Length: 466
Image (cartoon, rainbow, N blue to C red):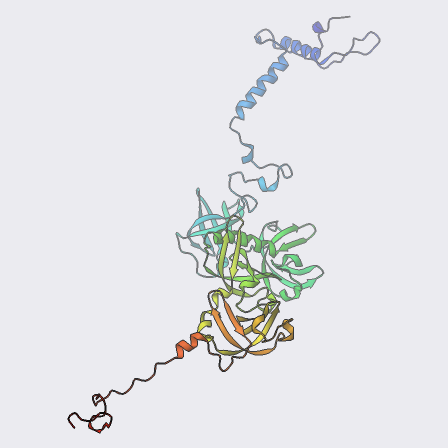
């Protein structure tokens, strides 16, 4: 068997097959044969000092040169073919953001000035952007003013970034409709499960659960209204567009919530909106923060049902009673902003006065009588009747008009003791007797001096010497 290491193979020829043909060469043997043939072709003028196969040596040299050439190369600064990397991770070749997907969130810039129908913004780093003037509802900011904007897209031909105001809607078409973009939609009609909307001539759909933060029962109330919403699904090929106003409202509330928590203090009065009503109270939104308004803190008058006083969507003024920052909980009060009827109770119901009221509640120990809205007094069972009372209902009934006598008023503890027993004619309270007693009138002063006896006219004392 010939030595494979010394075999020479002429390039372009193949070993002949046959019974006496040598066995196929291994990979190492082929590499050795190629190196030997290349050395013969190049001659002895270019000796190789390195040991090992020439092909492997060349591979190592090429790899070293390639590593040296790629030193400092950042693949993230170059665009790649679609599908190899998520779209939101791609950036333009010059390193700037190409659209909303390039850099999420707002950016701050300074106003340069107005040119044509656009407001130019300095974004820093020799980068400028433009905002359409029609996005400003009021006065256009002057040069030098700071604005919060969002990147819409990057125009490579002009080398400028197109911006929009934070929260402003884009002029929509299928080229810029993508998830997260804010659009303005007009509700055209109600359909099964939601409403149909028109977004700059593009038909879309908004589920009824995504119309508002609170539950919406009938979408027809929103027909012909223009609403800002966030795109949640956009498929140009299937012409499918789904938007959500609820997602936009939640996003705005989250941003507002952080600012509100920093300014909340106990004792403050805040304007809020009733979000939901429960049997135990109502939840009120004050600047993106929800708090509980207990039913007992709604009015000085006893409230049977929360719906009798407030309803979802009502605007109310509430007072912050307690703040739990760790648990992120607030407790509100409504009655604290109203006049407390107990402040004038002692003056309106002096002791011993006979007043009329209505029985509001029966208890085992007596009956409560409403003297005025928010002021109740108690008739103890011992003051209901001169005889023994077995059941309170045998004497009075809820809703019954009664005339009672005030025994004691404690405005601080909000208690008034009443009596249904008549006051006896000869019964005068000790305190009243002391207060009403008046001293007798003084006797008239005597002008004639007092004399002892009757003098000469007194027969019992004759004159001396007679």
